[in-house]
Image 1 (cartoon, one colour):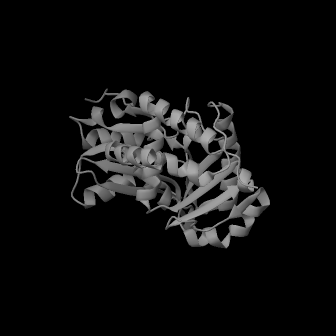
Image 2 (image 1 turned 120 degrees about the horizontal axis):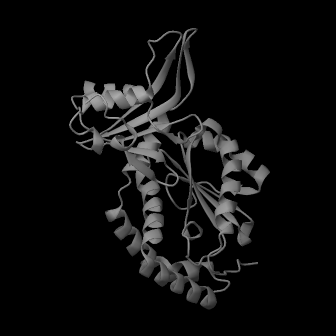
Image 3 (image 1 turned 180 degrees about the vertical axis):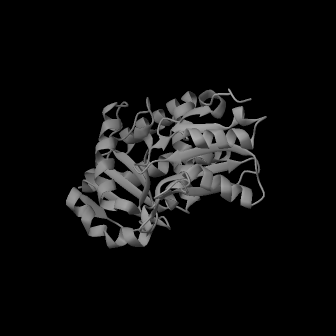
Length: 299
């Protein structure tokens, strides 16, 4: 039987369904998983949508995803390979009456990753276009209740125009920084006395370059925080002006720089340290400046 296309009002339950499913996906992808995002219409509060949860996973290696493909059947997914988009791995749950879809991209595929995030964020912040999109989808669902091709063709021009507009305006810097930090964040034992990689960090500079670093933990005081490691890479490459910083713990959460790193950045930019942006909560995009969280007692 053909898929029955229905478009309904936004439901706050969609956010919870995404979170529940993302845990299952992370469990399968394990350390190959860099990030997971709720995308598509169900990720946009107030937008009417087909009740299908779209999930985007960013991974280190698509080859490893292919190796683990059969594991997804244990949680109800069909593994359909690229399914029309080069560089993607597409999975669906529920067959023709699907309830969830997964789109998996490798970390260096910013074009695909960025366009999904850009479209989502644009719809979240533009009410007029959100209402227009809801109207288009609702009318198409009534016109093509069992014709998914007709439904998709009917909204394609609108989606392509919004994608193009959204991507042209999208500042995906924090997302690029997060992915870059997670990509190098792999816990490892260097020697019996040194471990590394439980925390990672990214620095974004005035010249719009990204530098990464991981923590180096030692049996004495010679270790280095991830933030200072990233800053060392920046200085080695001839730069000394920081615009943004994000540090990530082993669970993938953004954390504030430690006191020593704050002091280091303050001494690096004594006249401008107040302007350095710090990501405290990546999921909710909570941002402060270094000046907000650093004492100026020594100046």
